[in-house]
Length: 341
Image (cartoon, rainbow, N blue to C red; front, side, top):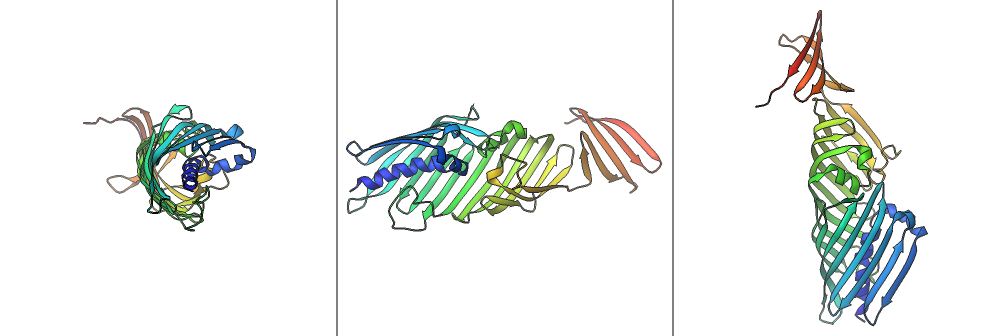
């Protein structure tokens, strides 16, 4: 019977989106599920009410060798974020010589996406799904670009919703000039709580079996704010086995006053919405001869004679600063204005 693969493929394509976030697992116990499959019309539809965690409605139809799916997500909660979107996917089913369907090739997209009740750039993807592998030729969403493969480790078994639960990941993610607030929202972090601004770019490598997925991330942010710290640039290098990553060499923040902070330790990606979580063990060090004391930047320097002195600087307004220098038997208080050409 050819209906089995088509209907199960519809479920895996739509269901994979619904259950992909680990934070939803705890809500499944309280779900309200209603579903319908019409084998004569080859239609499928079901709704999943996750109570306070949101709602998902899925419908799909097959006509000949083509299929279409619609997934409506309403107020899906993950971390401190809220997502609503209409997800569409459709394509063609390619049959093997024996007449059985073997491959689904299609496109996916979203409409009316809202992240924390604000418009979010839409999702689009080209993919191929077989009994053994999901190949993502291209996927873009909110300044993310993703490609690669997810391969079943237990091949040849029946195709079910859990077929890819034991899989091998080989994915490459690129971030291009993304708003830090949008990135925070997609990670379940409240942008208001973190007081984030600026742009971020970089690459993330996702590789390995589902039981031990290795993540390598190299991200660079520019001209932004993190809580009370205004920075010129920030470089984040992290790696580890999902969901725990550790900072590697070169993870630094350069603030606008010239203070350099070095980041060390580890953090749990699943707990990023709670900065005070016991799962995080992060230490911040001063990495140069400067430190910040509220709005003052204090530096230890040497003058032209090589004598050591301490300089304290307070920004008054754009291009203006109050500076105080102290060295042996000498104190200087001055006002400085910078002019850019």
